[in-house]
Length: 214
Image (cartoon, rainbow, N blue to C red; front, side, top):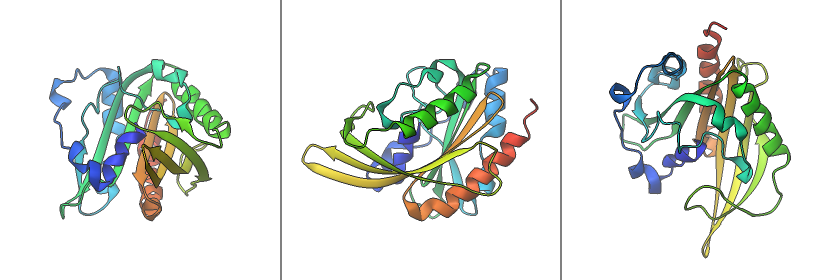
């Protein structure tokens, strides 16, 4: 859920306390796969501390894809997920998130097709967001590319304008999606200042994906 990367903003940082759910989750084969693929703190960089976000292992009732108010039918093909965020050991709030999702056969490829279609057909004006509590959203996209990404990766900077009541908010969401087999790994961050870090961690995510046996 890329919207949970909004914890990078100071106003929402308090909503992203660590939640230890791993012991309560049944370790199915699919869950073991996402646990292996998810980024480690050392891959993010020095001074990074891992935090599991609330509902970070749940599938039912928690979205993975939410661009442009589109319907993503691949959501029903998910069988396991894990989303982590990272904070700085200096006490700074979350600044990066990695979501890894396992799908039924064909689901990950379908998710990538739906993502590309959503961006291509994204309305030019404001639309009502499907995210609870969000206002009217307008999106504008630039691409993100990097060496070491998985082939056919999909990365964008989503320049977001949100009208919420009498307020108008503007922020940039950085999103890189990569797939290998039936597994999708997405890296999320907010603010173009994070672009070098996103490119670095997406390349690390690609390394983890490439270790999967197909």
